[in-house]
Image (cartoon, rainbow, N blue to C red; front, side, top):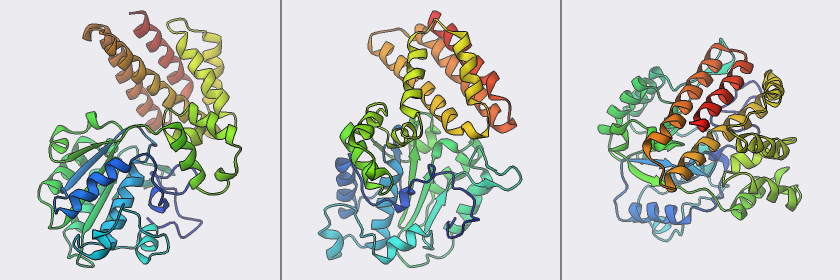
Length: 358
């Protein structure tokens, strides 16, 4: 989807007004992963599908677009430009970079949640019709005779039908094809898809890399005070996306308040919960709601990992898994059916209270 018009719908894989990963050339914190893939390309060992996993906002999509740009610019690994390259960096001024940014290359495909004109919101899933469209395009003649690259951002958004349709394409791809699957929770990806991918796990960024990545986005982020950036990076847990969310308004203070509420569990201040529910209701509070949901899943993930690391048995972790499933289902229903978020927030803390007491 091109964004060459002010009337173009928003992109589901773009965060706010931040440059899209396909427009981002700098990569921080993942030099080893990039070097591993570059070596595979030079040896003619590039896999047909790569599952790039890790927390949201750490640069998975940026690496995927950086690799795609390089392959489309240098399809022959024996060519001097490819053989001498120290990374996948391609100049922003190169024609291929401009065409990638405009999604104007016939051999580059993007699969993501599309815009629903009826509801004026993105679909909650990558639908099977979206995958079928990709399959049709992928089996056309190669536009420029080089690599064909498909980026799925993110594979977590596939439903079972669309995942199975994508699996068939990955199993029998045209020659010189590469599928780059971005996954925030790779363990939840369809096992048959995982088994056909090379797994590339990316770790959260160091705080210094988060700051550097934000500054590399340009104005207005590069002009923020160092102390402000470092404060957001400290609360981001290695995610540039989360740091940017914290930089919006009173994000840092709001995140600290949420952490305090979670830390007091199983004790729940229901007056504070009702105040929080009021705050998160309404279209103008989408950023705060997203910060809350991110903090919630981060709390659950951290709690389970900590308890498992301390030797907790499976039985003691089951209540957290059940709470996670109930909350996730309620959150999906809230989005699909446009339910009032107050009910969801109250359910979240009721489920967390029960899980932590057990």
